[in-house]
Image 1 (cartoon, helix red, strand yellow):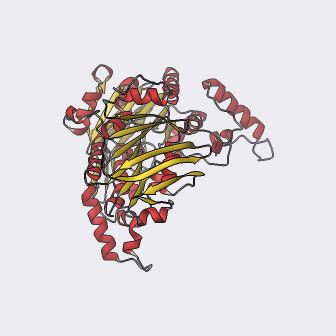
Image 2 (cartoon, helix red, strand yellow; image 1 turned 90 degrees about the vertical axis):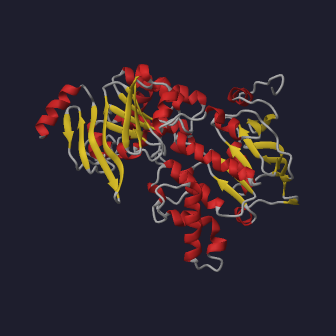
Length: 514
């Protein structure tokens, strides 16, 4: 049987091929006889809603997870069932995950050659000079803005992503898997990544590209494979690729285009939060604004403009130097404990690092923000914890709806639902939401948007930070644009486009708001 598969694989012209790959967890089928292939030197996008099976398929291909059945063929040879990560690396399969795997405190060169460092002959010690030279050669070859001796801690997210790419290239990768590579990048950094992908393609290296940003998939891909509910829906060739068609295949129907609204209408309810002259040296300066009851206030700006730093200071995570805050008409000194107690929630930018307890259940994650009710005297009331968990799962339609499920095993969209659920089971008055849908598919985005709108409709005030410009314009009642730590422009009661926000974030003034 194996020899006939090998013979057919050699004739297929594919670098990587999956045939009828199936995987189940606790009886729940997450991949159902999926066929998938990548050709040499092509950019192939893998798309689907969260929970469609993309992550599981990638884990199987890279040896992180075993398949239940089906075959993987790589360069014409069948890959054994007992397929480990090191086996995948030796084959030439490299993966750059959305959450980067570099080690802080080490240099660029040390991270690139971690586990495969050149040694001094006869001594068994690492040859640092040679390692730096090898790293410099790689950096120069791809013209990356890096130095071998740069500490990982001191370079940007985009720079770290470049190190991940070099790490893969140092292992002679023939296929590079990129999982949501642009989720934390600026427009300029995205353009650099696209040039890198073009270079890799020109060198015959295949790129498997996973993204929820349809415009990127459309711009880059030679082919697109669409998964839905663990099944292969369709493979689109270059001439058939369009964002509208991909979305239709992903969700099984067309989105209601009338749902996209860009007309801002201010809320004039009671003022919930008053901020005057807020300054944190080196982060933001002299920021003043009011937030009204039931208002969604969007905060726009480029990465590094001070958006995240502002909401962290307002919530009490980080300190600020000068300025005053009033909450519900009274002077307010933010702290995390005080914020939780007084009905203020916070959804952080870094979901996996700051928003969830990956190795804990849905129940524990939803309950963590309500310990004052669940464990007022230090002993957890199991029934109350379970009640809130079930309530949160039902409110947000978390899948799978199993309270005991570890959150780290959920898809990105369902993880974000859990993060939001822990606040919705409390009596909220105000919530800060930082990048609510990074790495989340179209369908899950719509659900998250709906819940944010429902919060505002119920009188909860929302401060929304987002790099997704259509998201910011769709959801916001009013938008403040930060530039270099200062408010540069306010948009209210006007027709707003993402282009206007981007122009303001770049320092370009317009004559008016319309």
